[in-house]
Image (cartoon, rainbow, N blue to C red):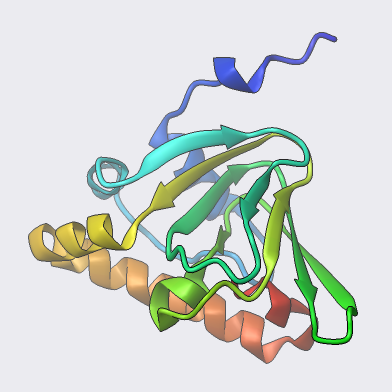
Length: 163
């Protein structure tokens, strides 16, 4: 196999910034940060990789971390009370976890990597630090995440992507 191991991946916030800038999905993040603002945001986030099939979020979990997708695709699976499963795919330039991040409610879906993924995470505690020290960036990020959630809730097949 010639593909690089996910453990050998290099992370640079510019990769996430490009993914967001060029994403055309209906639920893409829309934020216009400068390079300096991206660097500030990166200092509050943690980059990491997921391999194919690895779980990111488990339905019912109480974790509130927000995840930004730099590369790869995540599959979101929602199982209702009568064992029906609905699925959505979320790709580079978007975010997952905004539902629990804002609502303080348990996760409503399971999220798995559909191939190798590069992600950045932002915990609620680090977001509060960001808001205290760089409130304009935190506000713009909040508005962008709120818009993603709004678009997902408006488009019925995308509703399950609100985790």
